[in-house]
Image (cartoon, rainbow, N blue to C red; front, side):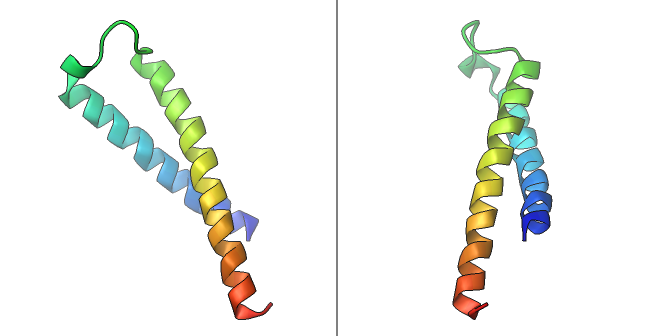
Length: 70
């Protein structure tokens, strides 16, 4: 259960990071000096995205186990 949640969280968090970087590159007028640089944003989004995706995936697995009666 934990291995599956970790694997799913890695893929989803990388997708979040790639999406945020693409959005930032295509809309540079929305970002000014108060935003962190792009490398700090990558680290921040990777950490927060991984944590969020891991918790959601783990919650889905727990609910799935409870519904199956295991």
